[in-house]
Length: 138
Image (cartoon, rainbow, N blue to C red; front, side, top):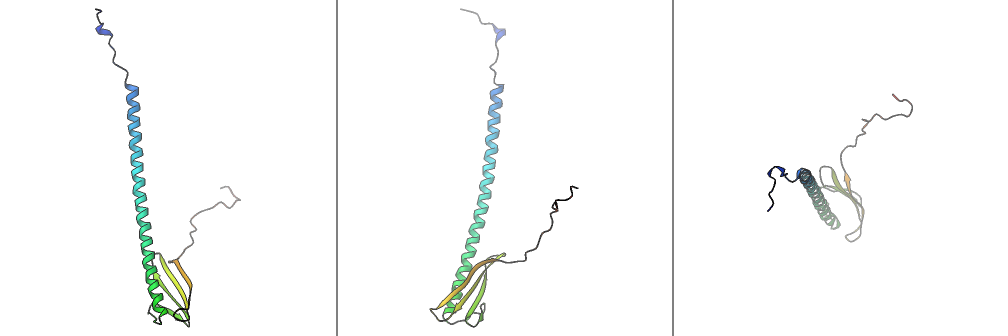
């Protein structure tokens, strides 16, 4: 039997492999956090989209009810009339409304002239950018 030299024992070199494993775990953690934030943003966007669709169809249903009342000769207080031309607006949200214009001739003879979701509010020109006029450098 051969004797082993007790002074020549060297531990295995694990420094490089350990650094690679730590780096891989950090990368996976960062990717997981980015995925989580993307999922949360997508959830907020889908909730807002679902609420917008729900609001639109609620306004559309109200507009259909008013149209049915107009077709049967009733004039609700929300409706303006000008001869056979009738119109009304139904709010969809704080920034949108449904505008409807209908020409009613008889109970079964009518023409929808306008059924449109329109943004409401004032539009203002923003002149906050200083653009280069093409002549001077400074």
